[in-house]
Length: 249
Figure 1 (cartoon, rainbow, N blue to C red):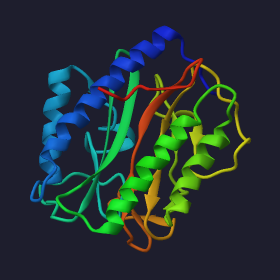
Figure 2 (cartoon, one colour):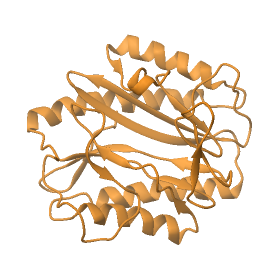
Figure 3 (tube, rainbow, N blue to C red):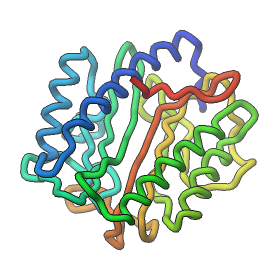
Figure 4 (tube, rainbow, N blue to C red):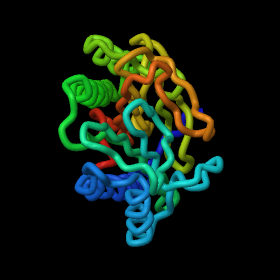
């Protein structure tokens, strides 16, 4: 069942999302060659304490960290480690969420580590553009399939592939609510979008094929062909007139 949030609940989600947005403003200054994903996790730990919020990820289904830090061919759910330093030319996806006043906020971004090659740059740009296109479709009268089709259209026209096995989701008092938000689909299909719905829209895009697999740690998802992958996400509310991105500072 897709839950409709009241204006008061949307306001609470706006506060949670703003914390997530501020986190990304700060963490982006730390991403440089030589930084370890473990040190970014330590930063997240301090940020969470300083902002009086709860981690959305740590402990969720046994996940061991506040952040997901996925490097290059890693799609999602990379586990931070003090032994994992990013290098010049890598791309690093960071996924972060918090729980505040009864509601969750969730967002993800992929960062270039120093100078990256042309393929990586185009991959990141296409993934971010696909999220923007999906948000434009997130308004009353549209259907969920319009959102999904927007992502797929941008990604595939750029020559890349959308991951099929992991999708976006509704979000609110629970981290994962109905509906699932696939990054592929057909316009004009699926549930109609109504004011008060809140979606975590999160294109995960591979430079090669769309197939993925999970590494032996039980969490880290990688592209099966080991091509690079990018991930962008915002928490988005359907309003009377369009969409509002809640996960902004």
